[in-house]
Length: 49
Image (tube, rainbow, N blue to C red):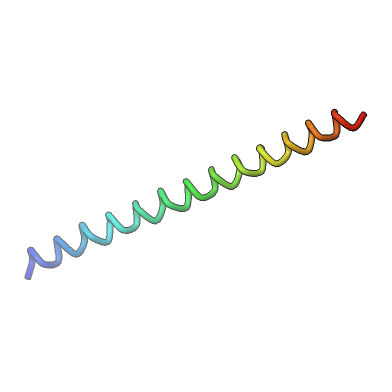
């Protein structure tokens, strides 16, 4: 029983760290995407003028 609980604890810890890294990468990709869109808009505005 103790081994089972230990493995379940490990699994929960692993899943929590995975979800944390996933959310972090999502936010990073969102920021990156926003930056790219902004730079594209900026370059288009420069071309217009």
